[in-house]
Image (cartoon, rainbow, N blue to C red):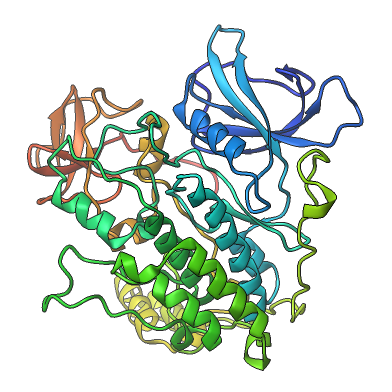
Amino acid sequence: MVTFVDPHAPTLGSTVGAWLILGRIDSGSYGVVYRARRADDPKSPPVALKLAKQPGDPRFEREAELLQRVRHLGVPCYEDSGEWVSPGGYHHPYIVMELVEGFTLYDWFREQQRSNQDVLQVLVQVAQGLVAVHAQGFVHRDVKGDNIRVTPEGRAVLVDFGAGWYPGARPLTDTVAPPGTTPYRAPELLRFMWRFRKNYEARWQARASDDLYSLGVTAYRLVTGTYPPPVTETGDENGEPRKLLRPSELATVAPQLEAIILPLLSEDAAARGTSVELAQATERAAQQGGLEAERPILPTPAASPMEEGTPSSASCWSSSSSPPSGRPSTVSKRRDARDGFPAWLSAGIAAMAGSMLMGVFTELWHLEHAPREDWRSAEEWPPPAIETPDAGVAEEVLLSVEQSPSSISSAYPVVGLPMPKTPQPGQKKPPCLPEYELEALGACWAVFKKEPPCGSGGYEYDGKCVRASFDAPRLPTSGEP
């Protein structure tokens, strides 16, 4: 867990502004979210208070600005904002908003079997939320499953606007890449980053079509359990667009839902339409219903594995704009994991008994060739999301990128991060291993690629791609293996 710059943090029963801290809900790269209520009113409903880990974090200014200007059921209701002065004298911005309880989108889908109609109902609400956001000139810039929450009543809410953009907002980064998460970046944005990776003055101009593509990736991953294939700098070897499997080839996706998802993944930004057009099309598809829409979404044998309430404040919404009651899931039966071990696992164990090296190769071969339905249970589909932002303003974000899942970063090559001005905490000091490392900034850096672009978490230095090196921990000499 990333700690505060200031070691002091609000404790249970302390106050932040006019708000009493009731407990901690979650912690992310940039802030800690607390459950709170008004300190002067014990009967006031609970709210979410998000406090910055870094003093003066500009993300909180952006989020407060958006929440105050966008009043919509698809966006958390704004309550308050200000600065908390720590005992050490540091000023940490905070935002108080409606407490949206429920699941993240991907967890909501895994919680029980969902039908095509269930997914359409959620996408309608997210699209309508984007309409309200885009109408105010805002772009979210990090639309993904982890930033969409679904309440037990079925209300879908777009959250975490700290990486958002609007005209006149203070810059968050000094790099070509804006904040975001690589697999969800629009093709034109990625190609801009590749083209200008050495031009430190170039900046991508955020646009609404970026959010629409991100929502397309989110929906595709939601129903298929995998990301769309990554885009390349200029297309494939023949200059043709990437080959995208239709969602219905990977899962039991109804035609009306597929017709919503595919245009959003177009490499032509204009073909994605507008958020208004998306909301209208999704609403029509949800209203049409039909037997196909009632079918649960389940993986097909062709599917491939993934890489790695009512608003709390009565002042938020009037009775005339109460949140949707939601639609009960068409299928409420939980997925049952298949019994027994996959065939390839037994073969791998048998081979390893004879030879460790041969066992490794045997297991890998079977993993590649085993029938899909033999090794992926319905309970595991889709697997949990592990998604890390790959551009941000604080050092801890760069550290979190360093630990991003290789399965994601390798599939979505992006420009490397500029070299930091100082080594990372705990980084290995010289002497460096000459075969694998180079020395820079008084520290050792592992060379992991010869030619940029370096990908998510990589730094470009002297024409090489490097990562911070750390001394390996000593292995224990006793105890359990």
